[in-house]
Image (cartoon, rainbow, N blue to C red; front, side, top):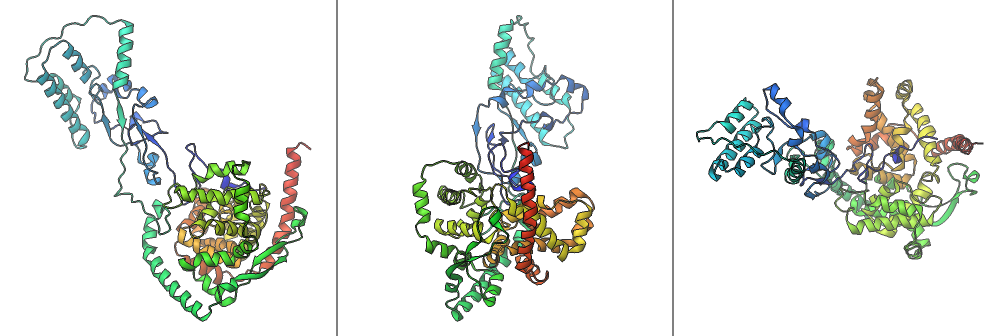
Length: 576
């Protein structure tokens, strides 16, 4: 059984969603005021010391620079809004630093000549208040000049002359009585309470802009340039599509009504599920779409028509008409009840869309929870799979809760094979291991040979493509264009689109001879596919025919292999 790469890394230690190539973003808390990430320990080596005297380095005490207690028990803690990947401290490092108390030793200065010495001398009344203020000001200006100007060649000797040489008469210090261990211990505790050395991380908004697309999703930082190139094109294409659809619907006023099947009927499933579930077929609520209307959908659905077409073409409208009260009834009957699926849903909802403008609201998260919980009670054999949250969330952008619920039902129970989202995930394994590999060998044989020679395991990459219906891997605009044809033409669209990714990048992939480079290149291909017109043109016009009968037959033949593998695995697991 192939590993499920989608669920191997779904959360980090802060409880936020994380995927290998996705448009989801990571957020984290920070402490030590507002700039230092909570989960990182500042690195003292990152402090910029303008020191030309190597001998003085041995005299610097790191504990005096940054007391450990500041990081373990910070005196101030705050939080900032969710950050995009541009704010990743591992990339940016720690920049400037500041002191919050004058007793902290200046970097580059001798540990015996620090400002804390001034406080001691103040106790002996060796300097008056004005003298102490002047010396402190000189020290701060000199340190600012050294640390702030990279071209300044002043050494520690300059600092030393500033702290010891001045025009004022010096009063000899009187010897201090020896301190007991208790006094030293209490003084150290007092210093650790007041001394703070705060690492501040700078975020340059002008260098790293944060952009959202028109659907409210955060644009990946490495794709901002592509997004800006296609942004105006998206707007122009939307207007063209709107005009085309209005003209088509004027000539065919019943086109949308005809998307709804008049009478649900039973059809043969994609493979012999009778061996697993005891069923002889599945009930179809989908209507065959006329060729002219199908071509119009391939060109893209305007936003104002998208929810209507998705809901009707998927069969969700017919299902709702047959069971108008099911959604509300399930939520009412199971209100407050807990299950394994419900617990997992409650964990995942908050971290599914942390940076989305609309889906990250309390109202939308409650709607997402309701849709997922209702389906988990409707179909306990599937329950909940970590990817259904993204599918349901994308549906809620255009649909109400009941519409999103019934469209999700159509996806899980009809548009995709019946065991795509079960715990065994047999059907998704069949598609990514056998069906897609067979199509890749037939449609792009040279590329298939190249990948085989490098022993690249494609299911590790493309499983996420199929499970999420390209939702977490492609730009939002491209994803919705794929979904337009997915709801109207079925699961074979996923094979067409996935093959188009490889077809468009064939030469780049073949030029790679290193396994790591090859893996990362293929993994990143969907994220750069902003030209949905080109992608769908290759999918439907440059790859030849895709008879659904041949796909069904390949699924039947391969399903036996996966079932036998699963049964053998269970025997080994049980020690038989």
